[in-house]
Image: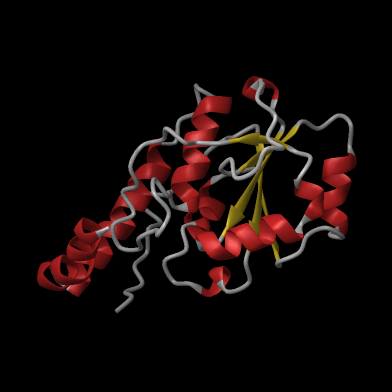
Length: 194
């Protein structure tokens, strides 16, 4: 059961200077608990492109091909092509793939233009608080959590408290409406079995 609640009172503009580029799987945009929706209501610099193969995506390739841009891909290390030295402070654009892990990997492998990008991996990141939608990936974060963790590295003085609060309120609203017993039976138990 998904309950729509307005988070407007918690959402404030976040003046990020790093352009966030979300490559979103088409099915993910329709998911009612997609956290990118919260990001788009707060981040002042965010672009969303929908699809599976972005190799020939004209707008994305214009950004990637511009020598003035320092584009970094936020994605776990899954191959040996990862460049090890990364000065995140000079990042101008952060690319994030939005979708369940299986679909995110598919987007990455199909989108050949992403393979040469420097990669930021959040391997030692915090444990996800996205208790109402669990990842099958160990240490998996929601797109909102991953974006904020990366932005904290790139822009350490950026205030993202309102986004974190809105995310928490969305989770609390859903747990409240489904009831603690349903939440305990369907989410906490599954989490402990993993």
